[in-house]
Structure formats: structure tokens, C-alpha cells
Amino acid sequence: VRMSPVSHYLLVFLSVLSLTPVIFYPFGSVAGDTVNIAVEDENSTLINLWSPFVFFGRTYNRTFVNNNGQLTFNQSSSQFISHYFPINGSEDIIAPLWTDVDVSMNGIISYQQYSTGSVLTRATRDINQYFPGLSFTAIWVLVATWDRVAYFYHTGTETSFQVVLISGSDLSFILMNYGDCAVAYNIVQAGYDTINSTAYFKIPGSDNGSFTPNLKNSTNVNVPGRWAFRVDGGPDQNNLQGTQLICS
Image 1 (spheres, helix red, strand yellow):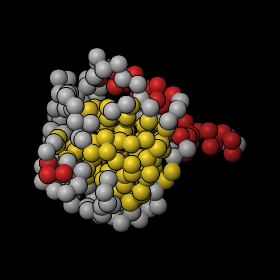
Image 2 (cartoon, rainbow, N blue to C red; image 1 turned 180 degrees about the horizontal axis):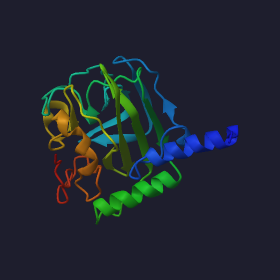
Image 3 (tube, one colour; image 1 turned 90 degrees about the vertical axis):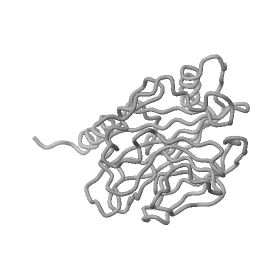
């Protein structure tokens, strides 16, 4: 039986949806994302933020989505060999999965900002669930997604992860979401670091490439595959009460 073009594209669309982890915020063409050009290492996208984002006392109006799985603020980064936190360096870094990524082989890196709509409603609900007592209302969200990206020099590897920046009033949060992640043969780690490492956090076990597939089972908010942090510099930034460590 020959399938009509409409049925074929519907099947492809549904198969993509089935591969998308439930915990991921909307991304890709369905969300109207802007897509990075597939250039290995050197690719970084400057995003002018619609709303200021406070990161441990410093306020930023822009960020760089870097190819190799991290966000920086003052300058782009093509660094593909991550230094383990704490770096004691001169840059604030948000690293959902910092390693040597090569989207020229496969995968897409995309991003989208929101100031209205259902994504803000979802972010408000999530933050109030993970950080009760704040009566938080999200006014801005940035979603950056690495969808089925490959590791450099390892064809056929596919790894999906996402970072969500959320702000409202003077409060700032990040979510790190993990789908299926391949074993990493290069140096890898997940977490965040600040200038001079006055604050930093490394997801336990994330610096061991053989444990990378278990990121989707780890959490600090009792939601497998999700880590949530308050990062404006206020209390409870690590929210470790519900931590489930990575297991083999």
C-alpha cells in the first residue's frame, strides 16, 4: 500500500514527537525555534535577551549558546575540552552538558525566547512546585535545546538535552532536562560555575562519560531527567533535598 505524502509527513512528525522526552519544554520547528548553523566547535549564537537575567548577583542582557553544550555571557566559547568545576575563571557558565559536540554529523541546536503564553504558565508552575513559598511568576523564559547531537569523532552517537532559563522580578532559575544520552568518550560534565567560582555545582557523576546515559534517571526535584536551580544568588540554589544520584 502506497502512503500519501500527507500521511508520510504525519508519520514522521508523530515519530519525532514520540522521541521527545515529556519533561522537555517545546522546541524545534513546532516551537518556532531559531536553529544554529552546523559548524563544529566554532559555532556560537549571540542572543539579546528580552528581559535581564540575574546570575549570582550579575545582571546580563545577552547570552551565547555555544555549540559544545554550554551558555556563556561575556563572550562566546569554542572550548571543547571542559575544565572541571570549580574553574576559578573569569566567566559565568551554565553547562547542561559540556563536551565535544559535532552537529555537522547529526543533530540540531535551537533556541526560543518567551514573554507570554503557555510556556510561561508551565515555568511558573514548575518553579513554584520545586521552590515552594516564593509565590513566583515567570515573566521571561529562554529554552535552548541540543536535539540528538553527535559527539565529535564518534559517528552515530545521539544525545538530547535542554537548558531553560526562567526569570521573574529579581528571581532567576535554570532547569536542565535530559533525554537519551550516549556514552561520552570525551571529557564531559554538567552543572554551572561563576566568576572566581564563588558559586558552582556539578551534577554528581556527570564528569564520567560512561555514566552519561543515566542523566535521564537523575534529578534533584523528584522528576527523573530534570535538575532545577535558583541562580540569582538567593537561598536554596541547589535544592538538593530530592537528589537522586546517577547510577550505573
